[in-house]
Length: 165
Length: 88
Image (cartoon, one colour):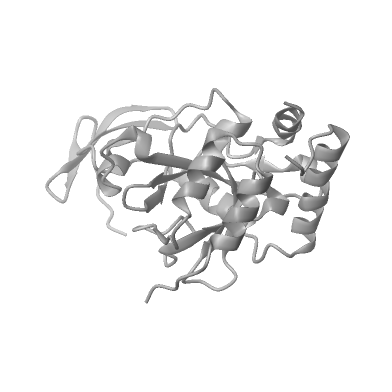
């Protein structure tokens, strides 16, 4: 059974406070309905968790919170890798294209799982295996894009620069 | 675990569609060639393990934990230091 959540309030807050990168606009539009994202294969280490929602919390922008609907207490802070690394490269493997039934690359939304450290400046994002979401059907998968990408990519400096713009 | 013995240039076939071939054996290293449909993902085991372990580390049970409060505070600091405001 799928659990539905209300996004309206969060969405409004997010809209009001966000300085407006295209990505956030996209994500707010996407979440204008109660949206469940389905990971047909779960994510590694949590294969039983298939359904997630994305919670927008203005206090942690530009991060979002990916929350499991199947496993209690399972959630991840995420960030769009393009925000912190404009030259982030994405070449989707054929398996992902077929698993997620991706027809149009413009329908792909990318998030990376963030490991938040006690000292937030040490916080890293997993660039080795981003979350790929097809916003046409809300199917998602954690995908190894390039084995050379860093599993712990430091993001704080980029965030500081982002805020200064 | 199924254990098979193979010589150089010999292979095994998995599910009639995935061929795993021994290409070269040198010192302590084995070169393996994998022929599989594009729909099959193939990775070094340790890469997959690395992702699993990082996923476990990345779990945040709630957005109200101490770690998350720290994050909020630090994000707020960035915006206030740099003059990026909440009023737009």
